[in-house]
Structures are given as C-alpha cells and as structure tokens.
Image (tube, rainbow, N blue to C red; front, side, top):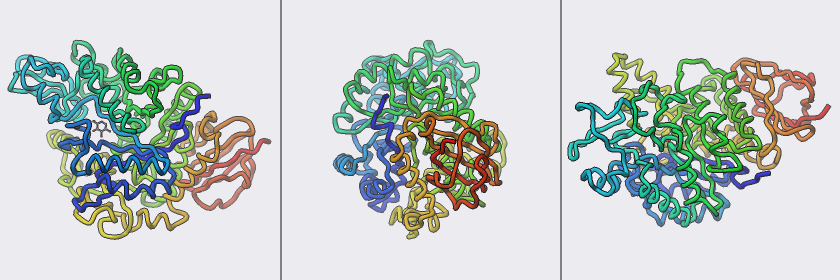
Amino acid sequence: MDDRWWQRAVVYQIYPRSFMDTDGDGIGDLPGILARLDYLAWLGVDVLWLCPIYPSPNDDNGYDISDYCAIMAEFGTMADFDRLLAEAHRRGMRVILDLVINHTSDEHPWFRESRNSRDNPKRDWYIWRDGRDGRPPNNWESIFRGPAWDYDATTEQWYLHLFTRRQPDLDWENAAMRAAIHAMMRWWLDKGVDGFRIDAITHIRKAPGLPDMPNPQGLAQVAAYPYHMNVAGILDYIDELARETLAGRDAMTVGEANGIGPDDAEEWVGTTRRRLSMILQFEHWHLWSDHPQAARDVLALKRILGRWQRALHGRGWNALYLENHDLPRVVSRWGDPQRHPRESATALATMYFLMEGTPFIYQGQELGLANAEFANLDEFRDRFAHNRIAEMRASGLSEDAILDEMRRTGRDTARGPMPWDDGPQGGFTTGTPWLAAHQDYRSANVARQQADPDSVLQHYRALIALRRREPVLIHGRYTALAARSTRIYAYTRGEGDERIAVVCNLSSRPATFRHTGFALAAEGLLLVNRPVALHGPRHALRLAPWEARVYRVAAE
Ligand code: NOJ
C-alpha cells in the first residue's frame, strides 16, 4: 500500500496577514507565525500551508505576485522565512508555500516587460490579442466579475486576466515561461520547503484559439468555464512540471482544482501517475457558496463527499476541508451559531476529519469562529467583494440586500485577525488591525479554549490525536451509513473487526441513528462532543442536536 508522510499529516492553513502581528502595523508577519509555532505543535498539526508571502501590490492579498523569490516587506525578510522554516522543521512540522502560477501581478517585471512592446521577448509570456472593433477579443468574463480582458493603450492590444485586472494570466503555451516557473519552484524546494499548494491550477490551459463561450457568466460552477478550466491537454503541463521540479523529491503538492470531478480525479492524483499528491475539489463548496439561501442539504453533502471517498480509495488521495480563506466560516453556513455554536462546530469537524484523506484546518476554524460581522459595505477589503458590490449596485439591488449577501458570502468574513486572547484586538496586534478584530474574540480565543477541556479547540486537538493513533483512519475504506437520513452523516472506516464508526447529527433537532450488522457499545466510544446521555439499544442511537460520536465497532 502507498504510505506517504502527507497521507498521515494534518495541514493547517495560515493566512499570514491575519495570523499574528509582531511589529504593530496591524498586519500579521512571519515573526508572528514563528512566535506561535509552539501553539501549532501543541495542536498537533504536521504541515503549515502559508498563503502567499511574496512581494505583492496586494490587489488580491498576495495572490498577485510581483517577485516569486522574495518576501513581502510587510511580512518580514528572507532571514525571517529561513528561521521560520528551520524552527518548524525542528518541531517536526513541514511548510508548504502557495504557488500562484496561473497569473502574476501586473507589477511583476515579466509583465512590465511584456506590456512594453509587441516584440518584447516576454510578450508571449502573457496572453495578448487584438480587440474586435474596439471590444475585447472574446466574451470571457473574469471569475471576479467584469470582462476578462483589459486594454493596454501602449501596444493597442488586450491582455487576458481570469481574476482581477491586476492579475494578468501567464501563457502556459510558452515554453520559456514554463521553464522559468520550474526553475523558481526548484529554487524553493532546494531551500527546503516541503511542497506547494498550487493556486488555480486547473485554469492554466486555455482553449486553443480562445473561442467565445456559450456561458460567459457561468460564475464558479463546475464545468461553467469550458474554455479555461480543465481544458484537454492541461495534464501535459502538469506532467512536465512534476518531471522538472518534483521528480526525486518527497514533496507534497495540493492543487486547487475547480472543475475536477471524482471521475477525473485519478488522472490528477492517481497512485500510478501521481501527478499531484492531492487536490482541493470544489464540489461540496458549491453547496454553500453558490446557493446562500438554500437550506443545508445533508443528502447532497453525503452524495458528493461519498463519491470522492469511493473514487480515490486505493487509487489516489483526497484532501479534506470545510473552510479556507475564500469561504465563509462553516459554522455560519452549516452550523447553528446562535443556539449550538460549540456542538455544531465540533459535529462538523468530526464529520469531515475522519474520512480518508488529508484533513486541512483553516486558522480560526479550530476555535469554531463564526463569520466576522460587517456593519457596512465600506468595511469589505477584498477586491472581489468590491467588484461584486459594484455589480449588485448596477443591477439595482438595495444597499441592505447587498450588505446581507456580502455578510453571508464575502471572503472577508473569514479573513480577519486570529483571536489569541481576550486582550486588546484579541492579542493579534498592538496596533490597528487591517480588518477588525472578531466580534467574539473575548469568548472565542486560543487562550480561553486551551484552558477549557470542552472547547472546540480541544475537540480538534482530540481529533488530530485520534487520527494519529488509529491507522485504520488513514487507509481504511469508507462505507456510508444512514445514506437516506437528511440529518445524520455517518460512516465507518475499515473492515470487519477493524472498524471505526463516525456518527454525526448535522441538525438542531434530535435524530435517531439505526444500523445493522454491528454494535455500538458505550465501551467502544473513542470520542464525543457532548456527554452521552443514554446509550441503548444496540442498533439505535438517540442523538441530541449536533451530537457527534466516534466508536470502535464491536463485531456481533
Ligand atoms: C484562489 C485563491 O484561493 C484566491 O484567494 C485567489 O483570489 C484566486 N485563486 C486567484 O489567485
């Protein structure tokens, strides 16, 4: 069986801007991460994924890189990075970097050269085309709204940007550009980084000829971008990238993979080819990002996650996540932050964490944070939010309706400062934070939850420890239980006597879990998220709202 270090690992995602500020400028920094390494070691995580730390004009908070081989001044220096890497390694933790290679910043020297003249050697490192009678070269829309093209008067052509206008797309058809990216990746790997989270990787290839799209405004739905997402031939780029940068190294790669379904996944992460270690799929995220009004659909969640579990068992590897810096907090979307904040946070945690795959935790998720609250639209910092607000205003929506929508779906809802204690600004900074401190920081913070044995944080720590203790939770087969229940998410891992059952009530009402073929007994309990009130009969469990239990299964 394939047994790799990153399969046993738990990943912790750090949004450096909001993790810990040590110099009082209100912006997190690398010395801040260093100062909190002992916390991360205490929690038990193995891999730190750092969102972009490179120089950037921050049009998209670092996802617009202007120099791939340096550190953003606000975050510190390369010496700070080297120290952080060494200290993480000394504690047995690894560090992976966010690799943004679908696009650069418009301030990257490559793009500055490229836009200089039509015959500049770097011209074709980006995608330049003539317009159509003063209009863009085709009808593509930016994922962040508006046309995907910007006009450049100097050379009288348009350049393509799938994200903001300050994030021009690189042209992956250009071999010299690809070689420069490969060299940059080798440079970081030689420095000792342990791998990469690869941003927007499924967008790097565009349909030859850049034809008009049938559905330019398809938003972020799967298969909505037929001409710039998972375009045939893209895997050749991944093969080359793996050959040129990863071969012979034991690195971890996780691709951000909008548009890949379980049927294609083996091509990307299959054990035989192993182009990438794992991918972050988007299918379950669409359940909460695209349909903010929709009720929680537990059946759909089970269908989607179950398909991924089955598709990759023994063939590849899953990445498991509920949150990241692009999504609202899961407790606000799926849980019950008013009535059952702790129970819903811990039930959701238990549900996803013990599936087959590498679990990811996004900073603050381990505290069960709800969405940060915003009193008015001016408080949103995200460029994508600004574009959406402008779009909604243009469509005539009221300010209240727009604010309501942004409070539920805006990316800034999960990007605010990490609450460390109940001191000013939650201990994040001695200055004024770039986004306001979380409204709940006095009650939901690291210090407080470390001291409380029943906290969400302690539950995450227990989940991590349990996963480390029980080998069946790494490679054991996932079998869905209670498939028709609209409230219970339950499954087993493993076979026969070597089985662990995970049973979670994902609702604010009591629920009964019935099963046959095995028994769940009080003495088999491995983890609970609230005191177990009653334990009988052998084949039915009565679960309180948001109750989650993990059992070692007893054979009958
Ligand atoms: C995905 C990243 O997670 C997101 O934050 C970013 O805005 C886009 N890719 C563009 O790089």
